[in-house]
Image 1 (cartoon, rainbow, N blue to C red):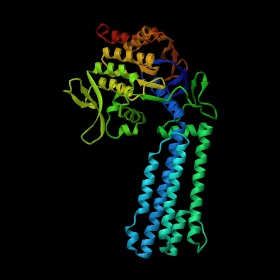
Image 2: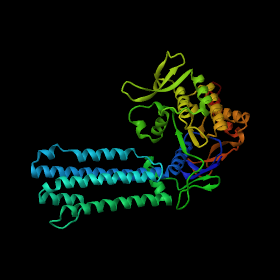
Image 3: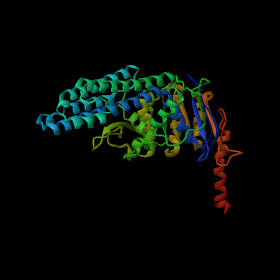
Image 4: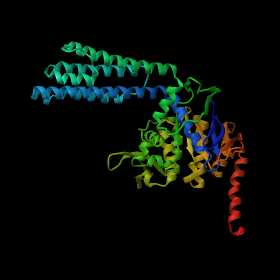
Length: 453
């Protein structure tokens, strides 16, 4: 399996972080030391590189859909002008062009990137849309007055001489639209082949709705090969997706927020998929179900929206997951990700402080689950934690299971030169230094408690 290294310098609270991603990596530090920042940007880069073609293709499809919508407006203009100039009942009743273009627009919206053949599918739909407009011209253009035609041609940006016949008008329209399509298609193909850095960042910013400036120094290495180069972005071979979970509330959130939060939206889509029944994950799913004393299942709620429910083993409890304790949600998203095949050797799982809502016993169970997923499925994990039980459990269970050599621990230490910034110290496979930082809390208890009053 591939090994990764992740570097970020001089960005927000982070002065320097050089993070090994070889199995399980644990980041520890005080609030505000940049742990979430590291996870967030790693998510952007991994998914941006893995989905490079897909994201570029989605932008291409959006442009084509916009052009087809414009074609629909042209047909509407032709129809309305002809109806006003000729007062024909037949024109008033005929909506065939708009209906045909709407259908083609919806088909475009359903095209997904698979390979270069997907581009051909989009081109074919666009050409069919162009034929609809040409047919609309054939049917109604002759009924329009000269003034209406001039207004229409100005809107269409069709430059022709006075008295031009229908064939000439159709020819100019076809040529303009064909040239536009070829230019956009060539631009897409060149970007896919070149994988240039500018196209990469443009697609990443658009896809993940990023509203902050990217770090000036940020690198990801796959087996010592840099993914982000000066002019190009290499594909990542060993990973197919990164999943970022900043809170278990994401899978049970309602309203508008989860639709605008790219991390929550992506997680909800993954957990609400239909179960694929991956046999390799069955033992882990069973482990979670035994712990919960029930199952996390997808059901339709009273407004026919699919959501997660908790169903107890005896079937006496069936409630929306949003009504359960947050600890249930933490294990429920793991169960659904496992069932739907998202946790495997090609996945990087990024989790912020999963222990925040867990009972101490469940903290240990969650740590054991992560270690076993890494050992048996090859799952890579980057975990941010404040909790001594979580850190100790991952260390000791990883040692027992024989994967400590690929389990890394980091502690964020205050910078010696820059206020409010931190340096991530690589502790290797040991955790003693992390516990020194945890012991500060004990010192504060002694200072503020009854013995110090």
